[in-house]
Each structure stands twice: as C-alpha cells, then as structure tokens.
Length: 383
Image (cartoon, rainbow, N blue to C red; front, side, top):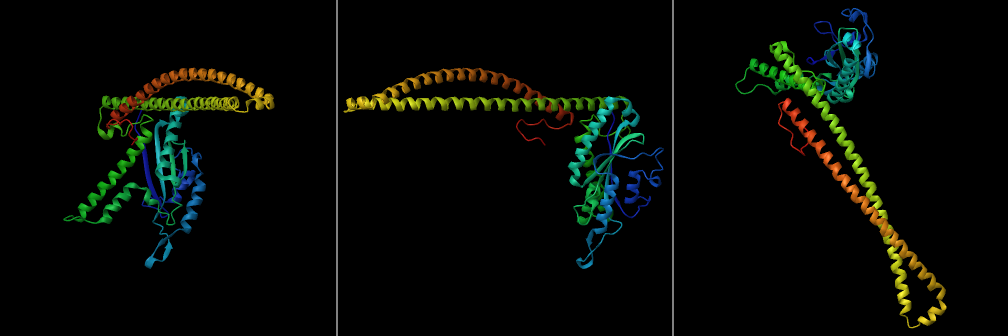
C-alpha cells in the first residue's frame, strides 16, 4: 500500500508563464504530438466516464464564445482570455501500468479505485464533470477529469478551485484592525492551504481509505521505514474493516427486506381467514335469527305450512354454515399455529439481526478509532 495523489488546476484560454492554455490541455489529453513530447509512445486515452476529450473541447469552445460577463455600467461583454474557463483534476494510483497489466488482483483494485474516484468527482462537481479519461502510455496508472461549468453563463471555472476561492474571500474582506498588507496576504495564504487540505481530506475519506491508501507519504513527514510500514498496515486493516462493514450492512439490509416481506404475507393470510370466518358467522347468525323468529311467531302453524319448503332449506343452510364455521375455526387454529411458529422464527431472525447490527456497531467503532473520531452514537445520523 502507498499514499494518495490527486491534483487540481484551472486553465484559461490565454497561455500561462509555461505556455499552457486550454488548447494545450486538450491537445495533451488527446495526445497531439505538439503537446505530448513527454510521452515515449503516445496512445489515445480511454474514456471511463462522460464524453471524449474532443467533445469536451467543442463544448468548451462553444461555451466560451457565447459566454458574457458584466462590463462597465452593467453592459455585458465577452470573456477576458485570462479568465479560467476549464477545471481539471488528475488522480494517480500507486500501481504502475505494468503492475496492473500483470496482476489481475491489482487490476481489480485499480478498477475499484477508478469507480470511487469518479463517484467522488461527481459529488464534488455534479453535472459539470463532462469527462474522465484514463492514460496508460505513462508509467503510473492515472486518470484525468475535465470540469466545465456550462450551466454558468459566465463560464467561471475558477470557482472549483477551493484554495483560490478561500484566498480571494479573505482578501475581499480586507484588512482587520491593525493588520498591514503583509499580514493580510499571510492570512490569505493560510486560508488557501486550509481549503486545499480539506479538499485532500475529502478525497482521502471517500476514496483512499476504502482503497487502503494513506493520506501522505513517508518522506514529507520524515517517517522511519518502521513507522511507514506500520502506517501502511494500519491503512490495509482499515480498508478490510470498511469492506467487512459494507458486507455486514448489505446482509442486514437483505434480511430486513426479506423479513418484512414474509410478515406482510402472513398478515394478509390472517386478514383473509378472519374475513372468511366473520362472513360465515354472520350468515349462521342471521339464519338462526330467522328460524327463532318463525318458531316464536303467533302464526307459526300457517308459516310452517306455507313456507315448509323454505324453512327446510333455511335449516339446511344453517347446518352448512355451522359446518363451514367449524372448518373455518379449525383453519384459524392452524393459521394461529403457523403464526406462532413464524413468530418463533422471527424471534430467532431478530436475534441474528441484532447480532449483525452489533457487528456493524463494532466495526463502526473500529473505523472511528482508526480515524481518531468519536465513536458513533446508536440511532444518530451518520456524519
């Protein structure tokens, strides 16, 4: 295991001091000869998300040509060529291209790293992420992301640079009491570094931790070989804990869904049985009331004579209803027995679910300890 690497930059159409502009960035991504002299054997990039580099270039040029910015007296004017109109992010994996091609296990790890990196980019920039491509013609396995704010009429790509935004905000607020220009610049630089540190931490939490990568390398912190090995082991253990927690979580969710489905089926059966029993009981009671009323009538003789046939049919209906009621009660007892057995099974399943939930809490606590965070409170929302 090694440490993460991710870098961002915003570009304008006018070349910078090193001659790099949006056109140069697109040429380099497309492996145009003029911009890829640093690559021994240039190869076209592979798109892993969004559209190709050429499509992004067309989108950028069209948006830059039509974008307007407020000018003097509020009159719109065309964009200044020095304005940042394209934002890029480069993320590199510790494995080399040769290692990934030679080892299926490492190839699988890199694919997971790419998937998590793309998801993080989408969370950071939303629909402004137009393309993510992979280059395999250099030593290190890496990807490039191209962020284009086409939803913004002013095409302000500089807003995606957290450090530059933080520094600009401090300077815009002006000096504090007793503060000179040098102190203001120093405070702005501190804000810049803090914002960039937060950005790196965000990537570390979302991508590096699940992939077993450390936040920083050993040389920048002057770690000994033993300290670096220990930190690598900790990163690997943390990765395994996260993976185990995800497995247990998925198992718990599947169990809950299955249990809810079974419960709904049993409840539906119980309702159906009860409705059937109620219906039979109502028929029997109504017939018995009619029969009793006839027997107590002052003109029972006349009714017996005139309605003897109907009375016989009514009595037959009563007997049939009684028989069906007995069957219904028997079926209800069997249903209650099944329900009792099911409740017992539910209790056992509930115990297994409680065990799985306890395992998740243990893993969550281990994860919090590894990240030096307070243990999660049961029932509280995940931060």
